[in-house]
Image (cartoon, rainbow, N blue to C red; front, side):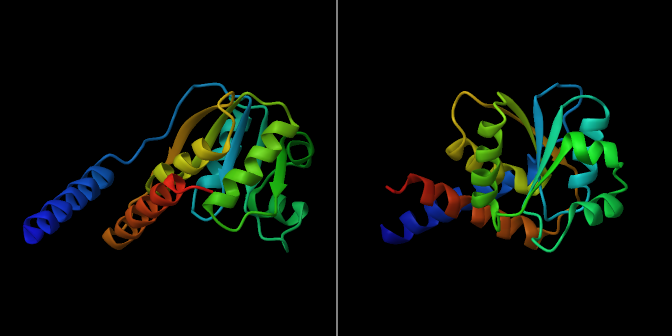
Length: 176
């Protein structure tokens, strides 16, 4: 009986992982939002956020999880952002150190700026967990759309991220 229960749990876990790995989200095109939130940590994320702003699909971009030693001028030079765009449209957040604190930092910025819709930009394999953390943290009045940066993750990356997603789901279900 215990062996069958263990086998069933292992089967559910394996099929869950398979579903996670084959259903990675895609980039979003054309949808307008008030703002774009970019989570640091993966290639192409900041470039995608800047592209969204330049195309006029969002008014402002907030980059969450920037290293505290990075100054706006350094950021602008690294990502070839004009001074005008930096001043009007790009805000850097220095408080977040993980996905959960990205959501908290972004929630504070969104509320301070009275935005009602946001485009969340992160890597495709990270989107499920990031979206889950944002849904848990943001007020229901803020609409979040997912805009994933396509990658070619290794199996180990997917496995680790799937386990982090499960851990986040379990921790979200626990009382505060």
